[in-house]
Image 1 (tube, rainbow, N blue to C red):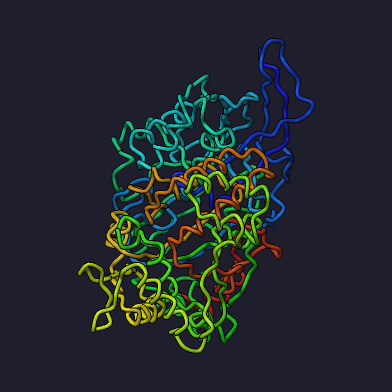
Image 2 (cartoon, rainbow, N blue to C red; image 1 turned 180 degrees about the vertical axis):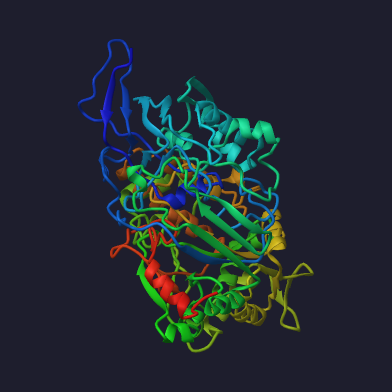
Length: 639
């Protein structure tokens, strides 16, 4: 007989992170044990709880009526329409084949879920409770008995086991390689009781997250009936349990998802005030310029603007002038999305850090921000920008203790123990794109590395020219990349911008057919095993995250330190040390970030007065004002 202690603690992790889980970002979770736990004679203590936490008590008790940041009286109805770039030919984001459709995760749900106002942890969502021993050798999820897929068939423990085994057989390699080191087996203990048994050496801070943090559960009977495969493209979504289903699709042009009126979870407290729109529409455009014109004409109704130029200059159109549309800057407390160019380190010429440093010196952020971005952005320096996980100042004694063994073995430069972390190069020339001081410094670095300028000014080494292909798919980036290319040419680098269509772009990023490409590093507040997919040597050959193909023994060992951290007091200095080492690697040319959402929309959408710190939530907890919508339609504001 199990002796159970029931806890009300959990650690909600962000919905955005959950959606990323099966796309390659494994989430780290851990255990919280109350001091009053009981012990069964001769047996390990078993905790039964509705939730789970690494780092103490969290926000919501088991009986909370709704999330604090939602409007519990938000009406249901209406449509919100957004845009996407390029085209698509598949709804399967779990395969490397095909180009996946926008918002393709809407039909799916996982066992655990999170909130947008606490960065650590997870609720039971498709389970009523979970049970685990202090050793975290296993976890049992006691599933709800009322969960149904969108066609009405029930979800049972057999479906959970099937989903795990399906991903282990047909999922993308980088996902399988990580998860199979965590989960030894999955057992069905009853119709609604499923057990995950963990490998002895699996990091215990991550195991429950790996078991319950997936963003999709699939129907065993549906896959068997249809013969569908997870590793093949698909022109409609898999059968799911989520709040939205596919209403219609025009492949490559338009998608409409509709709210499932028979959704099993509509009355759960965690869903009060959420999933409010009847339909969510996505319109596809060839590029952002065409999309902006579509927004102005009312082809779609909500736009999250990512171009500072457009934000500053392009929103003075009739609907905005007449008050039919609005633009807002809303706060964003998330870790800064570290946008950057990254090098392909598989190319020998980019394996010399001096060459990478020289290339980085030629990107003039200060000029770009003043001239192109209207001062909207801040420079990225850290992989955990805008958070307390960012390394700052000289290393603390704890950080030194983590880094020194790697220095002693010659894996890191000794300066990392005494210096401030590597920062992005700055320019004193904000009034012109070329900073001559940085040009001289970059020239000296390339000379030192053996890349000598010839009579024509172009550099070569051993008769091989210093060629550089910057891969892009967005015309909006031309105005940013072209001045950078011109600066590189002044340095003697034969740089070109190669802008291709979306499908080629996806394929070439995956295959490593580039010298430099744009990338974004979306880190979490509780970094765990998923870091290996971003930076681990084992993922360098085939990863949607480790695009730079980083292989570093020092980084691999620091990843282990972070993954094995058991408390915040251990985690933070470990992440600081990792951040210092990653920045010292110099595999990126940092771009920019902003700590606010810049959104424009037709004035029929409403949101809570105070947004949660870690989500904009326009598809989650915003709602449609029917009276305002009818008035806009009468005014001919949109199509």
